[in-house]
Image (cartoon, rainbow, N blue to C red; front, top):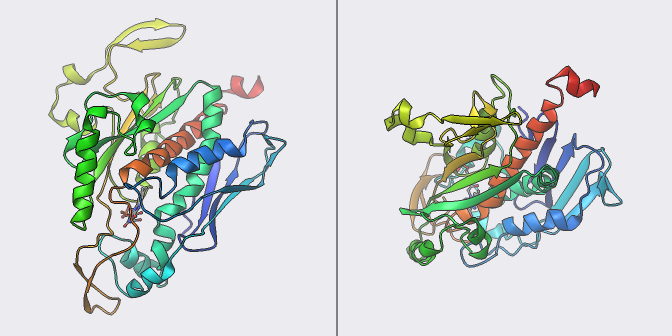
Length: 361
Ligand SMILES: Cc1cc2nc3c(=O)[nH]c(=O)nc-3n(C[C@H](O)[C@H](O)[C@H](O)COP(=O)(O)O)c2cc1C
């Protein structure tokens, strides 16, 4: 079954493995005339890149993007856009010991069960390096959305049992963990350092907000905006939970507490007194900010001794040494933003087909 493409109109296909020659993306359906520079794309890839600081994997990849097609004279041409990033610091021999052993928490067994063959080097296709293509494509979506005054911002909202409380969106890119509460930085850094010294890893959560989204995005019933966002976010490796607006906390609340009261209508746009729904009603955006949250599991690769089995079912013990993110959260922020931007842009393009007036004018 194919599963490497995403989106209905602005459609991306990512390709490549962690230790292969290169990774990349092909985008079909990007409108012509979008002004885009290589820097617009590189900025986003630099935010995703490994080796940014001591809280990310020490794999040294410059992740310099090459544009192979679809952009000419600084503008998209409407033809397929192809972008490529070379792998330059893959140390495949670190993975030789695990080529027949199923690492706990990884996709090793399930890939084998499905395909009977897998590129074991660096997790192959299941590696987070696959998301390079998503982030590159997301940078183009971001540029188009910016021209429509739509902005998506993500931040790490929780690491272990420590939560961001006083949210300051201006602080996110000023700290290595991409958290939004300065008062929690020292505590969170100390926690990550501690688990790393113990040969362990730690989980966390991310919040993503899209500001300036017009009402009317998303389609009933299987293309609901929240369903599409869930699929987009859950497709990122390591994600274990997803919520919109108040999310799971609605389970213990009353209708009178959860309903967003509508106050007034100005120029076809309704103003709500609150945003408990996270900007989506009936699978369609309601003009409020879209707010989603998701939980990331602790990194599976840990240097503590773990028990597993090999492909013949023989018991094995292993330590997954090498270069890994001790906490997945900081680098997942630009990936989640990219996925959100890809969904929003796709919905906007689809909306052009939602009414005959939009087609004929
Ligand atoms: C930004 C980011 C970085 C990641 N880095 C690692 C890593 O260094 N080591 C690791 O074991 N898993 C890492 N992962 C998680 C794996 O990609 C993921 O656990 C694996 O593909 C299995 O998929 P699943 O956890 O969704 O079942 C990372 C995920 C993200 C989003």
